[in-house]
Length: 443
Image (cartoon, rainbow, N blue to C red):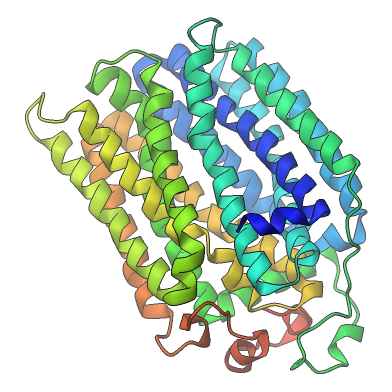
């Protein structure tokens, strides 16, 4: 897995991802504490709404940006979005109204909706070898885990000496460092004519649709492929469990368990530790077992873990403990990582090189639509009916997602084999759609 870091271009991109995500992790902790300061017992509702605004920006903007990503200089786009995110984050410590939080989160995530799919689509072009790309996906998962492990630990240490508002400055520094690393890296140009060997040679010459048509085409193709529909069902299961963690943790720690603010990042750190452990084990496991077996089985662990939380919270006061919360978050993080990490392999095995930006953007948008549903649901239920009800309802949602994925993803699908995604042409042969999506092959 670490051998991919020998590629100098990928190494710099990975470092940029690490520093940006470390800063983002600081902002996650700071935003939770800011919500608690502004709303007290209603912090879960405020945080759920803020995160829903974040997802709305992803859902609406990501497909459009993905359709335009190969028409704009990739490096200029990534640098500009990093600097925009840094500027917005620096304004967050000065808010004193809840609506101001929502506006700044919208601006911040609009920039992220432009940055993330373009960044994801660059990696397969930097690492065309399948084994290298699989290793890069696991490293990317580890980088994301820094947001929920190393960053919370760093945040807990910083909170002992500075107010939480200073954590936003750390986030801005991460975005600026990321921009500098990307700015000094030579990125490959998208190759619109590169396609799998099984593709008809004339398709690459088809005229490209406009931004809106391209975005719709990408979404239609993702929804047309059974394997990618199953991937969205898996995203729903992860979103249901993850929303309980990210929205309800501050209430569970501060109110239910009566613990200090410094324990909020430690609880989030347990979630990240589980995710990181799974990401380290996945490359070898995927070679032996295959994507479908790992992802679907892990998805069923998610409602099991969150359901255990709901049961513990429904018992008399004092029955639920701090160690139990850490263990449940650890398992939830591991299962979520096992579902999310191989997702890029599934997408990459279903699209041509020229369509990677649109495909990643479409999947990015649709997967975040799941979070757009679960974030406000978790916050509203926690604020009105309590954390136990929130966990119970989202357990049902996670179970529905896992069950749907098991039914949608055919057992005989070539991608269910050991370690190699199916060629794009094999899946498209059974799920090709008409219209503009025909030229945008179906993460």
